[in-house]
Image (cartoon, rainbow, N blue to C red; front, side, top):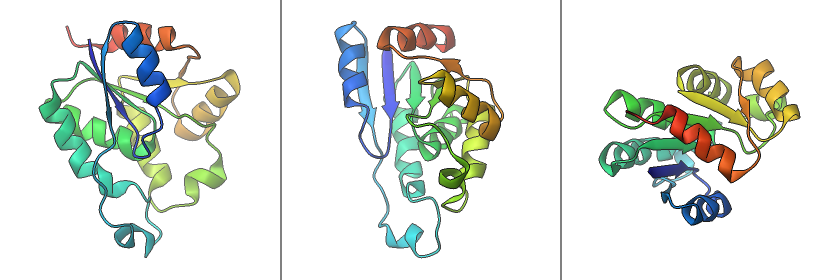
Length: 159
């Protein structure tokens, strides 16, 4: 299985190693950001600039599943799926708080849209799942170990 791990900050390397050791082909896709001046000046979600290159990478990449760890990455994956990209799993590596979700323009709207349109959502703990459900209006699967992620990948993978 070919898995794309999406994070604009390049953080899922430990998960990538664990999944690769289990036998799957893993690529970390972080996109190529626009200069931060485009988003910072008006308070927009700082990782929106990675969306175009992430969409292109997913559509061209031949991935079986895209696993996003940030709202902007999940939104990019949902857009890519409409263009023939892979199924999408949206996970937040952090427990979402209202303060974080509304700190940047469009972050909350993007996160809710991505959660609604993802094939599956996951949270790292029961506490994070409660916050995910409260703010993103979607029931996530609680996943803690890389093997649990691999099971989730197999559930959403295209035929």
